[in-house]
Image (cartoon, rainbow, N blue to C red):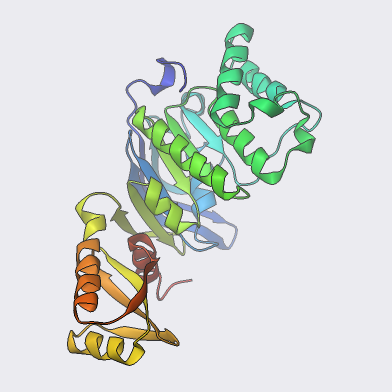
Length: 315
């Protein structure tokens, strides 16, 4: 998708150990440790105020940690900020731009800041505009863009310098459903190219579809790392909603099989099942027992279940 070579070669990813950062009496990050590997999408999830954005600012060399260590492809953002900034693509949640410039000019201006020669900058801007589906708006002023379009421009801007590490803070904010699907495909492609992708988001269902692992943070601490591929997903506890024309029979069947169920409304119940294989077996058994099932739908995926369990007693 981008030019070969450059900072993407030989990346070592992100390594964070025991990082702490306070603002006066407010402790924003208390003790966060995580690893994000090249070739993977790592999700950073947690409630508002859990320290996600503060951590990303430290990774981007925009804040200095009070304690702990950070390495971006082996470089310390505090002692080698230029090396780190050459390797990262940073997309903040609040994306600012120059409203008087056109969409194309925004990217070319960023390229000039990285001292990319003008002919190469034009080629890269053109390629990125197609990647984020903004080519038809290339000559529009940035001020006319919608929130979602600005988000896509922000992603393109983060990719101008061909980074080996991407730091994305709520990149799906303001995107319509189609754009979110396209973003998911872009992130997977970037990881497939060997880049390290760390993405903070509150849209857990979509993160589960794109991420290889998730780091859950709360109250400024990292409290769990959840694998989201392979065996970890196929056996994880997830929530399913079952609707039936025979609510009494459905309840009796679940009770006889010792499947805990929570009544939702009418003939609908919610159950938790470990893994997709067990969910499929439960549906087969229900139909085999003559229970007239009209809906069998996942309501909470493995990532959401892990997040809710990990943050049950936290804010």
